[in-house]
Amino acid sequence: MPSIGDHYRPSGADAPVYRVVGVSGEVALLRVTDDEGRRVHTGELRHVATDQFATGFDSADDPDAGFHPVAGLRNALSGLYWQFRRFL
Image 1: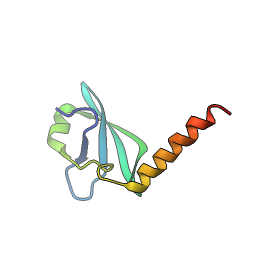
Image 2: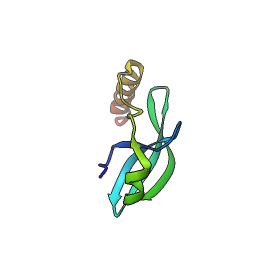
Image 3: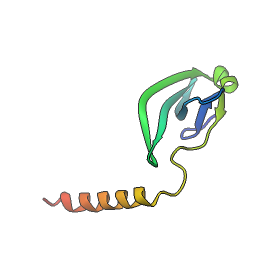
Image 4: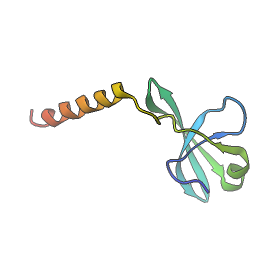
């Protein structure tokens, strides 16, 4: 049984990657992509019955995994901006 946050792709070559966002009766999957080292969701939500999920999906790598120094710096600067912005 998948856990929320796990990544899977449909069986087959060059299939899109989905992140598990819900598991209750059926598995809710949100399609994600890797855009210049940042995880981006497409908004595409897919519901799959648990028995179909077990036979039709394979585990996939997390598109956001890895070390991205530029993304880390961008996030730090954004956080710093918002800390000061709230006082203006």
